[in-house]
Length: 363
Image (cartoon, rainbow, N blue to C red; front, side, top):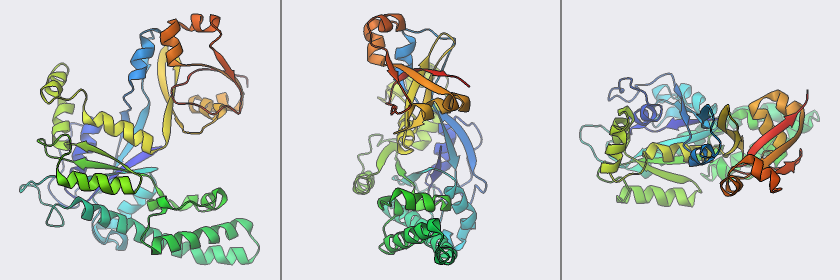
């Protein structure tokens, strides 16, 4: 699972990406098309439950869940028609599972805005429009072939035609496909299209360093828009976060304290991007390692086991589970077992966020 960071040129997108991945590479120049190939990075997802577990189970190492991010070059109006190498960049968005859109919510005469003025809602509309136009092209290009196959009696093709027609009608009403609920069979029939407006979105309001809480009217507009569309917003000063990311401890902690922050805002982005991807964490805990594992919300126990290794899923027998609350109450796994709090679950069990697990398998 991976998220793509998108935005118009010069909104702070690459600065944010570099800070998230703690990259010390030179920042891009102040030009609209500065990044051609997407940069990829892996970031950890901060989770205080790891430290709470290791208070009682001391491992050789602690491993957080990881999130893959892709920095996609700035999109401009006309991208769906190839402007600014738009088709190349849009193809990168098709490959990610969620979109993190950075919108600029600060004025700076030294940083040119590609549209000539700072208007985050206009920025959001520009990108949404380009993605919708690109999705329309994808659907129109696929419809004729699907119709031919449907006429020959192909059941999956019939599902595909129905899904395409519903999507086209939805897009014709200027509605992104993430707000359209298709029957599961129809959604599966067009899943290979990589429709961009069907992907979940997280908005990142890039704010001035004097507005870290996002009180500016520009940010309020983004929050209202996101709320109306069921999305989340994280406020961050990308420039400031990049400076914080470059610091070593304890200088980093001192700077955060001076700013009145308990953690970098980047931590919030990582957690919200993780949630936007529809992921939750379960844990394995032992002397070798305490580790958080990402798993889709709604995954079964065998599917969760498969995240560790495919053999675990193939040969799944059962899973032993206890909670962090039980660990903090009984102080050790041994005491949890003796108190009868260790649960035994089978193949039908739906994983819960925060489960601490031992998988039993045989292949």
